Image (cartoon, rainbow, N blue to C red; front, side, top):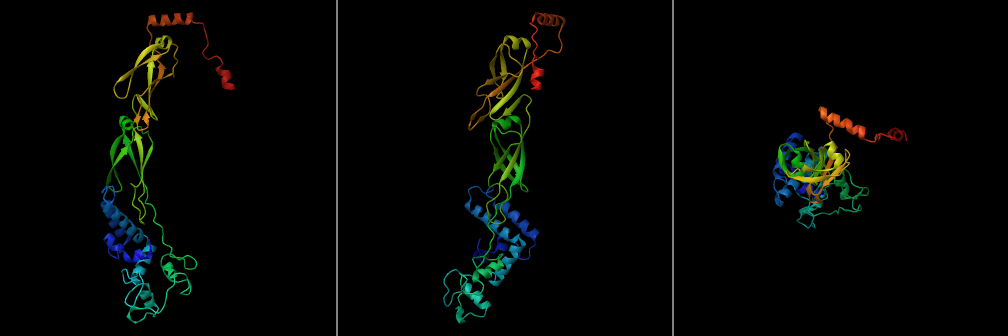
Length: 335
């Protein structure tokens, strides 16, 4: 933003407030206009986008007490309007020279001038025209190099959260969120999000108060747990119990999938608890590919044995070779 912008633009008019409006009135007017002209409310509307940036620029100046003071002072000198002309000044043209010539009683009759205000520090003691504006706008650079205007700053981020059922998180969905004082927004949640994952939507946050780009919207996803399935990246997970005879002898088991169908998987003979099987292509479908269903086997130990089963188990124990499954465990623990 330049000094010429400040002279040409009536920021009070842009926000629809009076020049003596207090900070609360300015903020209230800005928020109302920002909701009306926000690009999310006017998709594809270039005029609305330009208006949104315009009111952000106005609010950036009027919400800052020091900048507002400087803005008011400069426009007061110029009579409240754009009297600084950038073209060449003739006998009947106004411009920088008319204003400052009048200030120092050096204007010529008819609007002409007899003095030249240099921009390189040679025409005025102390550096020239930039030094004058530099004093108004936070100080010029050494030697009259220019006014110290603030660069536009990016708007602030908005943080919110969205809670999703497990199945919705796996499949992806568009959810409606209410943010920023009642503004409603549809947000696309990609397939395969996990609990606690953050999704950043560029440009969907707060408007800049200084004419910069809007901030971002950061959505933290909360995924409700499923009683059977879990998720790990693009893979779904499930724990499936098997019987002792199935673990010893091997078996073919039926495993449910999230889509409501099922797959048959072969359990090798001698399978231990914690062993994993993989059902290809039964995981999360994303744009980068589809994951698998990882099946963790757990040998189910019966809690209540009838008389015959207990007698059979005792016969099994007597017939086994007595191998200690914990042999070497203590030594390994001490290593």
